[in-house]
Figure 1 (cartoon, each protein chain N blue to C red):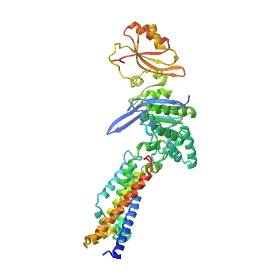
Figure 2 (cartoon, each protein chain N blue to C red; figure 1 turned 45 degrees about the vertical axis):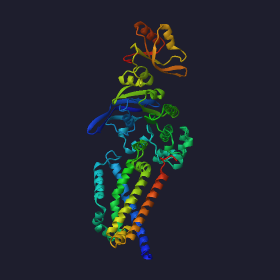
Figure 3 (tube, each protein chain N blue to C red; figure 1 turned 30 degrees about the vertical axis):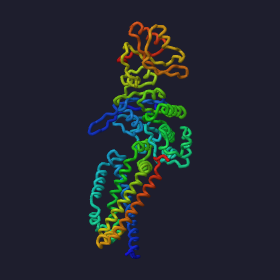
Figure 4 (cartoon, rainbow over the protein chains, first blue to last red; figure 1 turned 180 degrees about the vertical axis):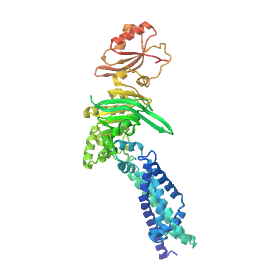
Length: 221
Length: 336
């Protein structure tokens, strides 16, 4: 049973899972980072309060986060088909993963930025810094450790979602676990895929923690 | 003297949970070029709001702030940002960038104004020398003590060659010795570079130590202002008296209720004023509080004396002290 074909299949599964997770995380940050910044800046008491814009953004983010991921994937089938030409496989899954993860990432970014000391922002204002400088150099710069921890959390969550996408033919390790383990009762393959997912998760977490520790200047060395 | 900061009828109201809170109610004052001006008040008096109005971190609800000949409310965003590069500020909690080292913190205001990196670093190194922290250039704020952090903040504030330095409770998080050294540094900066300094504090000793003028703020209003000597020697308002006698507790179980406060301003440090008075009047007094210092051979500071019950002796003592050119003031209810 552990023939070359199975091993190849598992290796491809790892490749597809990584491809989906990493690409979706990058795309989710491309959307989620600016939205997270917008939430912090436009909130009441923020640097540029825009109550209406804030309320709309806040509502949309909450709405997208409320839809269960599996349902969201099904709802997005027409859109996915329009963008990538088909509704199954790793590339198609990236679309729905990104849509599901972007609002989550926006909240992660928002909470990281809200942790930044208001006094430091005030100090930058008192020096005549403009909004862009405050966002880039003060908020993102001071929150960078929390942001890296956020990326680690996002990677883990998106990896989990990508496995879930296997239920509807999404590709990757989750797909293999469902097709072989669940539908064909090959428990050993299912267990191996689960172990591989655990290993991937550990690697993400280890790398994230290591990087954030290395970059944090608040600790005395 | 030319005026550096002129505040006219400044009013600031906040909306807190649907209620209107008046933080400042029509404050007017003028700060001269090169002055070290203290603004003192109990917490919640509105002094922090007042100092934030001086660089428009808070926009006043009413009234005007003039910096030299410029009305801050007439400036647009870009104009205001430019103006702020000339009005530096330091804070109680230092507000340094925790993820940048000392040198990069000092470079930050220079980065904002588009200076070249190399140029900024050169300037930062000079400033580190001024604040006596040359060896800490590559340290991170988390590795510094409170006093060192405030020195970095001062260096950062000086980076743009400001005309004005606003200090918001800048020594309130520091111990007395460190406070003294930071105040000495501020005094030095004021002298060397002629920067006008505004000091917000709740501690009279800070004002006494370095300020030339003082304004007392209570409940959003200006209670009293003038030179430090004037206000300290003859506090008129209740708020001023409360601050001048700050930290002193009423002494109980003493017989006489008659107390006076005397202020030393010009007597020689080597003249035993109180002892001579006791010898002359042949009656003892009780020193309830004494805070005097020898400043270049001149006695400075204040004392609170409990005088004998006897009316004549007490009067004689007060006359003796007035003759010696001390300010004498009767205190009511100092002992209870």
